[in-house]
Each structure stands twice: as structure tokens, then as C-alpha cells.
Image 1 (cartoon, rainbow, N blue to C red):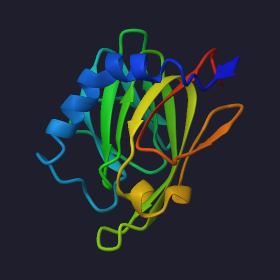
Image 2: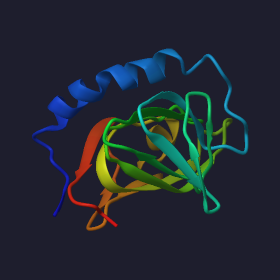
Image 3: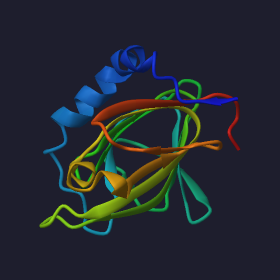
Length: 161
């Protein structure tokens, strides 16, 4: 069963707040390369990045590309900051597939498409959503979430694959 649980948004944001706070605090510490979507700012426990069919351990400082799949294990969590300053916190047993990311640093125009295959994702939207809310979409196996606000949580139950 796949759910977007709005009543638990506050609880999930509070639970994932330490990751989001760390992501925000360190967002200015290292610039993200122009060809990357973002960077992993925090990683605890089991975190993997799948890129071009290869899996590697995800650690703080790793670049996230527009086609990467980031997964956390039962003991894992990760905080990611995208180039437009979108902040995402992945809870345990989460799989996030980045499907498209483009961002113009001058005009703040761009597009963000990602899907949550399983687990929990807390998001604080960045400059793309502020410039053009319809350009940001998060999908689950059974629904699509268009971003109209600045903070939200998506929870997908089951294996989601």
C-alpha cells in the first residue's frame, strides 16, 4: 500500500529534522559542481548510490547526479542538498530515484523530477519550486505529488519496486 500521509507530516519533519538541519547548516560549505544535481551532506548507516548500473557506498561529500538512485538500509539515513537549495532527508529503508534535474543559477528556472520507491522522504523545497512550482514533481509507485508548498513528507509503505 502506498500512502502520502499528511497527518504525520509534523511528526516526520520532527523525526528527520536533525538531518535537514545539518543539510541546511552545511549547505554553504562546499559548492556543487555544475553537472551535478546536488551533494550528500549527511550519511549515517547504510547508504548507497546506484549510477549507471554500479552501486557504491554513499558518504557525506558525494555528488548526486540527475539519474542517480539513492537507497538507505534499515540503519541508514541521508541528507541531500540540491543545487537549487532543495533539502531532502531520507529515512531508513528508503529508495529515491532522481529522474531529472536542471537548474539555471541566474534565472532560478529548472525542473526537478524524482520518485520515492519506498520509505520516507522529507523535503524543504528550493529555488525551482519558488520560481515555478509546477516544475517540481515527486512520484510514488501509485501517485504524483506536485509541489505547492515549501515543506512536505512522503511515505511509501511496502517494497515499492
